[in-house]
Image 1 (cartoon, rainbow, N blue to C red):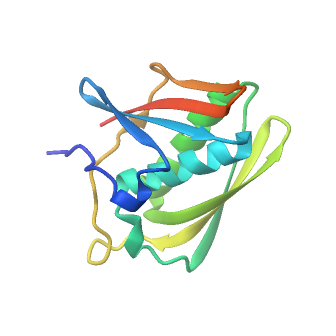
Image 2 (cartoon, rainbow, N blue to C red):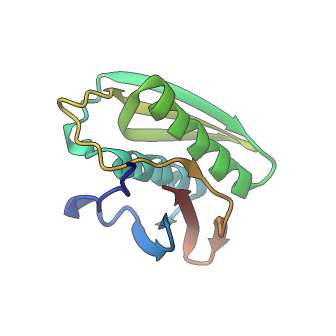
Length: 149
């Protein structure tokens, strides 16, 4: 039976905040720039899937996404990253983001998932559009994301 991801480690708590959502998992992120918001979302997803402290940064993987709206860009990026984990078994510890207009190039640093070394936190089935939000405010960039678990 699938399990809901457990809470991230204390040192990771500043990257994002979880919130209660019936039957799903929600997070909120803040960042000073658009690129940093997407980077934090990518790292947050990895932290929800696996205890990333045990992930070695020995391999780079690159993901490119393009969309007209930031909302779609966030959804599509996280969907691609979730597929990278579930289909290819790659887990990352860190990421960097390069912006080019309506596209992002994300470089992930990690390694193949090894259940003997990486503590799995729980299954995430999908990134939803339900209450998905990406916005720029006077205080910086914010996002709200709900995952189907």
